[in-house]
Length: 139
Image 1 (cartoon, one colour):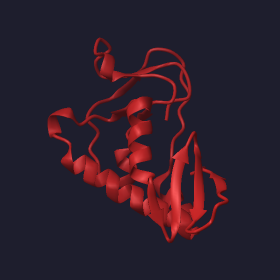
Image 2 (image 1 turned 180 degrees about the vertical axis):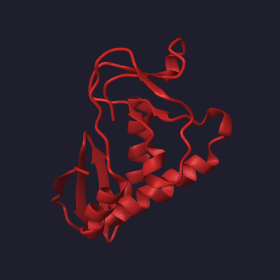
Image 3 (image 1 turned 135 degrees about the vertical axis):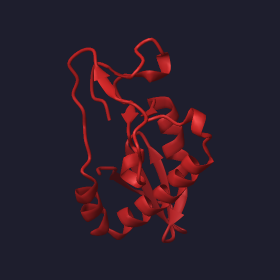
């Protein structure tokens, strides 16, 4: 997850290889065994947010709702990866594409709750309830 400035994946001339603020790189390695398709190179100072897979698993495993959510997302993400033709696979996820994909993967039911992602938050509604509790997505 890129916080500022920009990075490039191999080819600086290709627009799709340019990462800017809020773009993601290498998410696949969080959910599946992955061989990276290129090398990232910074053209200016950047700050990255990284996720330690083992620590992520440890935290998610302690919360049943987080576990169900991560499990559902992982299944849908890996299915999407498997359906994507090899020629268009990339280590890069641009913010607009990623936002759509996350919403489509997480607009689901988890243990009788409706999960609706919106602007970095998850709205959790129990079936039949009119009031929703909102939890900040922090993983």
